[in-house]
Amino acid sequence: MTRRIYQGHGQAWVGLLLLSMGCSGGGSGEAPSVVQWPQGTVLVCAGDPIRADEVDPIAEALKPLGPKFTQPHLRRLALTNVRLPLAAGRAQGGPERREKARADAEAFSRSTRESDLLPAGHAPRGGAVEMVEGSQDTLGVSLWVLVQGLEVGSWSDVAELPGQFVVVRLDERDGNAQPQRERFTLQVAAFLYVQEPASLPAAALESTLVVVDPAWEPLVPGFWRYRMRTLDSDR
Image 1 (spheres, rainbow, N blue to C red):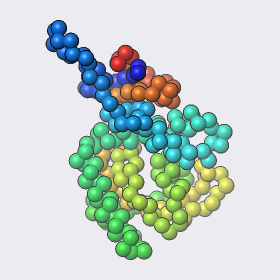
Image 2: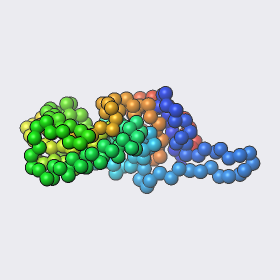
Image 3: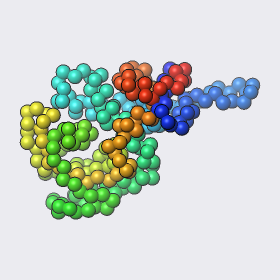
Image 4: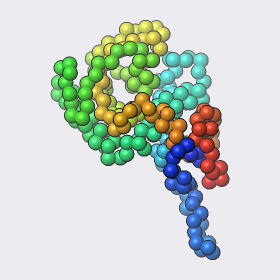
């Protein structure tokens, strides 16, 4: 299968994710090795395999923002707003910081099951609870998608957003008929594993992208593909 590999500007990634290194010694005759991505992988950003079944629930949740949006466009929005920044954050934060943030978020989540109310200003291990109010523009796409499935007064399970794990309580929603204008009041306990999660969409533009399923290549906007540049179209 032909796979396209893109390289972000300024990265020292050349060769790390090449699917076939072809570095055998002279005359060795060894067949080049091929990376086997997990089943269902369509893209790999910054070494993080992305499956279609991860992207499509996000795309489905975004439908109310544009009822006439096509599935390819919804997938494109899900990739650029959520899944590619998530991959960039995982690479930037590293496994140890990410697992520490996850463990703290899980400990906090357990505490929410032991108490119906969380006092304002309570500081859980490794994070802080913040009151967040606003519509989709204020919340951001990834948090807005998360709260769509919550009931008022309930805490979410631990969820991973770009650069952080969160546990969210939905306190109010005003029920505006226009989804992009509906206002929410939330309590958000955030456990960061990168310093500036808001910077991750830009960081994703500097990441390496491997197109495993050619049908998904057009779903990455041309500007992103231009910024990432083609390294090797034969691997």
